[in-house]
Amino acid sequence: MIYPDYGSYLSSQGISRETVVCYDDVPVTELSVLGRDLFGFTTNIGPLQGVEYCVSFDFDGAVLNQILGRLSTIEGKINEFIARSDRIGTTVEFTEPIRIHVEARLGELQHAEPEDFVPLVITRIS
Image (tube, rainbow, N blue to C red):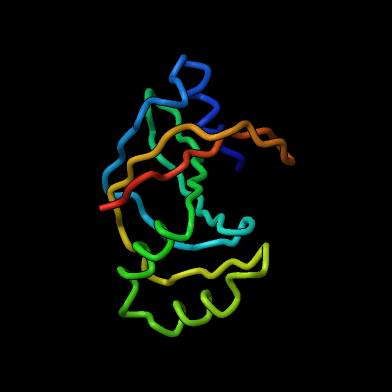
């Protein structure tokens, strides 16, 4: 099933790119290399008003290091990801999610198949 994009929904509701949105208990089950110093993961949130959404979170190396610092119990996965973190498209999945508090802003509209989406760019985790 394809879920609607949450970033596109927020954008359609008039949320500006300067607005900080906060989410508690966000599960991180994977990390992907999206570009040079650009990483990300996706998850579902909701239901919100009866709709479950897919959300893409993007972040830089500083946020990546904060996330990796919470994964010390699965050090082999951390080392695998770091060793391959210069290869765009690399994804490492975790058997047990970690949960983080996320502060993020809307990113730029991205064109992809099967639909366009707007990632949320993480500015801070805790």
